[in-house]
Amino acid sequence: FDGSVTIKLSFTETTKSITLHAKELLMHNAVLTLRDGRKLECTEITVNLKATTATFTFPEDIECGVWDLVVTFGGFLNDQMAGFYRSKYTD
Image (cartoon, rainbow, N blue to C red; front, side, top):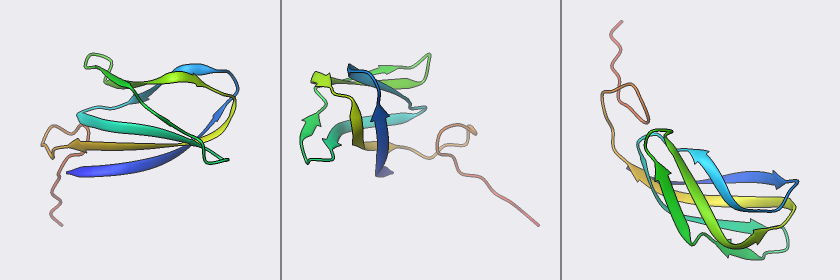
């Protein structure tokens, strides 16, 4: 499967990276958009398989304020009861 999500984030400190939980997901891209329309595109995505996280690094500091983060990703259905998994129910 492939998908995208928009997450509204409020920053109280400047930073160059954002880390999200990402179990069994393949991150393709991330773009931050400030309320005034200014955009920052992620320049590096680092996956930590042990911690099941993905860290998005940006080319400049993310300023304090409210931003929309749009992440595009992919994955696969599995039977491992983790990530995005299929299940069956019989009544």
